[in-house]
Image (cartoon, rainbow, N blue to C red; front, side):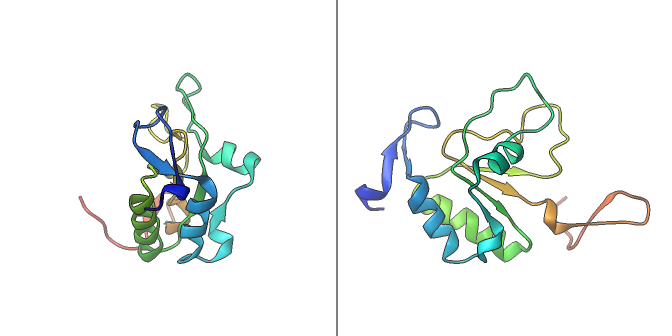
Length: 129
């Protein structure tokens, strides 16, 4: 990790994290451009669940992943640059567990779900559990 691409952000972990531009560049190397979200208004909407009481940080970017390979790319890029990853789904939780922390990438996996005939999410591929 080059010193020019990181900055101290003690609000997250106290460890070096990527500058947003370097993070977006790393993400864009393995993702179609329409998957990466940097618009502040859209980021704000993706950065929290329905827990209005829970704190919300400012995400550096969001990714709307559509495949396991895209999820893997996001996690690898963030790990290399020291950026936290906050996974989120529909955003209907009430615990604040999907809320962004400053400097993170919000990993929106809701595009990976399909809807069953009963109106419930149905994963495209089997997962753990």
